[in-house]
Length: 134
Length: 120
Ligand SMILES: Nc1ncnc2c1ncn2[C@@H]1O[C@H](COP(=O)(O)OP(=O)(O)OP(=O)(O)O)[C@@H](O)[C@H]1O
Ligand SMILES: [Mg+2]
Image (cartoon, rainbow over the protein chains, first blue to last red):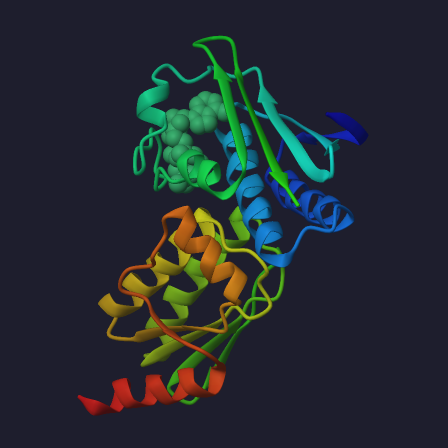
């Protein structure tokens, strides 16, 4: 897999969640992603960026346009140095929330993308990497 | 402060969401709407989301709350104009918006609101 271009965007305040969505939309368009896939990806980005801000206490979104043979995709990593997720199985259950959410962010985001990887440990922050291929 | 405008058309309130909303803006709209329903005794609320190219769990939850709130205040809510890609994504996300009435466009939404509001 080769990286065609990459960059980074901070997610500190609410407005950054909007900016993260806009960046993802622009990049997905650059990849030539069709509207339905693009909409799914941007929605996943919104969920994960909000989690980074609300639960992770802020962090970053790293992006990369990647190539794998004939495929082009957009890969995004959301990382924070927050409290981490103590019970991953619970957090990956539809409808489970530790706050006042619907508990659909993580599980929903996973359904909306092609690759989903979650790396977290109590006290060691959280890192979620997703990829959507065109 | 930034706000989403609420228009009054007779007994109904019309909200057209045209911006990519940050969370606080969505919450403000929810507060503003319940205040307007109570002040104007509106019978219905029409929310036009045809300009929205994404609805995530936060906006979905806000729409559900507005619908529930207005029902308690004796008003109907109809959501109109959802783009097909947004609808498909919402279902896959796991949000089915239970209890929220929908219509394809503003015209049909208004018709639905009138039927409901004046049938009782
Ligand atoms: N970056 C993170 N750092 C720490 N905890 C997290 C992080 N992301 C998610 N969590 C935990 O996982 C739970 C589930 O997250 P998820 O996004 O699925 O639901 P939610 O945010 O609670 O609700 P929703 O996203 O539907 O509004 C959260 O309630 C939170 O406890
Ligand atoms: Mg969430």
